[in-house]
Image (cartoon, rainbow, N blue to C red; front, top):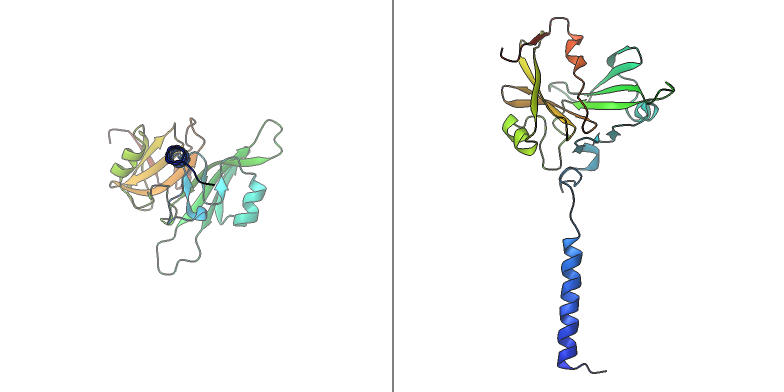
Length: 208
């Protein structure tokens, strides 16, 4: 069947519009779209997850993924668990830490409330990681606030703790460089109690 020139023009315009709508619908949030070179198992999604670990995850499932923690601290239903990377040879030891507490008032199930990592292999969708700069962190999350700062007893370093409460991501900064990243639920406060594990660590005034 032959089509008139007018019909062909209409058909072409219709197909072009459909293709335009299709390509325009492929939009994604900067906090959920994975970069092409970052596998899901190494992706940091602010407010949601680091790798296979996510906010709200049952700690039984965490144990199945991570095994028993290498260190930690627990009191009154709240706990920090720490897992060290045992596959690093001759490199600075990195870790993943998880803060958990009871999921609800039944006090039957514990779930993940915060996830922290010092490993540079984990990256946000735009490629930011441990080792990135404070300027880059601030550009990505303009609402960050300096929550507190500590002088670490074991190293003498001053760590500045910045948090984007609305986006659910925080960073520990030493000399303008990210040393650790944490995710927590959006619009909730980050937990920083792990700083006090070292009895020689001192919380400083903001102007120190």
